[in-house]
Amino acid sequence: MSSDSIAQLIYLGTFALVLGGGFLLTSKLKLGQTLQMASIWVLIFVGAIGAVGIWGDIQDDLFPHQTRFDDTGQIIVPRSGDGHYYLTLDLNGTPTAFMVDTGATDMVLTQADAAAAGLNPETLNYFGRAFTANGEVRTAPVRLDTVAIGSIEDRDVPAVVNNGQMEQSLLGMGYLQRWGRIEISGNELTLSR
Image 1 (cartoon, helix red, strand yellow):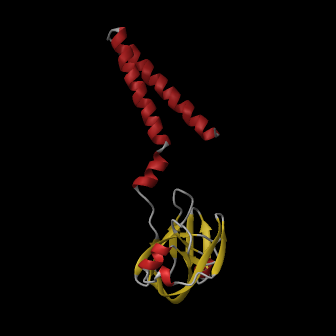
Image 2 (cartoon, helix red, strand yellow; image 1 turned 30 degrees about the vertical axis):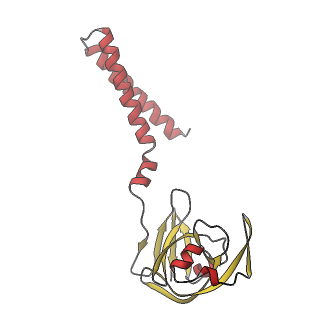
Image 3 (cartoon, one colour; image 1 turned 90 degrees about the horizontal axis):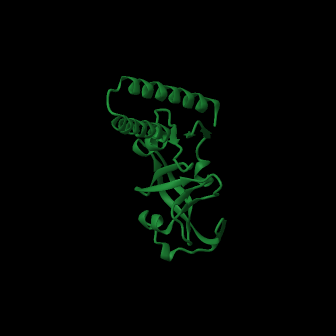
């Protein structure tokens, strides 16, 4: 527990003691009613402390941060609650969700995302190999006509389609290196051209 947390706990405890003592001194109710009222106030107080303690988590769920685009060509991506960065790119005009993966060499598409972008995963030649945390998988090299994020569009972008099971397409260094600068600071990923 940090010293700030201890100080807050002491402050709140003193506040509760003063509030409870004042209530008992001014109360003209019977002892049973006084204890009942005091227990209700204790529950309210504990609930308020709990709500303050988890407000950061609740706030992230209620008010998720949005990717921002500025006039200089920068894209600012907030870190998600799970610690990752997510971007939606238009592949051949189709919005596709990616998890940013600086450990991935290529832009790696799931078969479903490849199909949505106009590729036929069943006719691709899976002669490439990738070594993942789940073992070796086969990959098929493809070229995407257009990849766009915000107002920035790239043409003839190389990618690979994964023949294995993937929940999310990965945005690897093959695409990220097209940006002049990649910076992670203050829970934000900034891409600049």
